[in-house]
Image 1 (cartoon, one colour):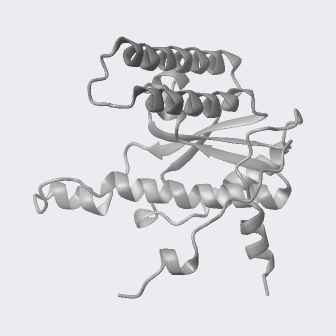
Image 2 (cartoon, rainbow, N blue to C red):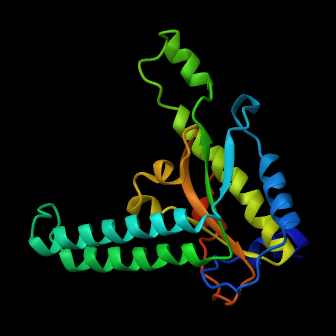
Image 3 (cartoon, rainbow, N blue to C red):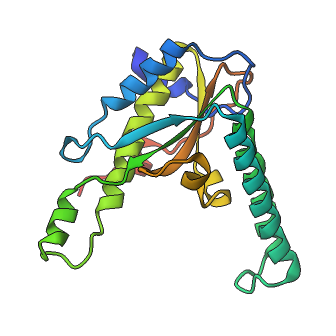
Length: 216
């Protein structure tokens, strides 16, 4: 028997079309508060949400995304992309990801999500002590932490009747996200949209339990 939580998880979809209504501020606060409850390395609580309301900043993001998109296509069309033997396929991929990225700028609520830059992790301490040769775990730990926080954020949104979409693709089109947004104390890792859904995407086939699980 499927319980309420399983139904919530199963019904969640990535939403790219929204109604114009703005989500209530108290709903956003509840979603972010749920995200803040996520576990983190040494309880560092490094995840930060930046809601982008400024039209000036959105226009700046749009301009940079468009220029980067055009630059990618120009390189392919010039034949300078020597490492690809299928420029047409890459071109179609770029166009698809660009289309699936720019919609976020018109969403009712747009967030940039990342982590503060001064987190002192276990691996950083070992590196500082000269016990390991490279600080290889720090960013991975933070990536995991952001993922857990985002899961709480989007599932609370789903419970409230909102749709969301987590986007990492735009980060390729906007390499200087922090500078554009005026953020100097955090590393942005993705964007997230939220709003009342104006579409019902079809269910995507997921891998089975047997495909993703094994005992060793």
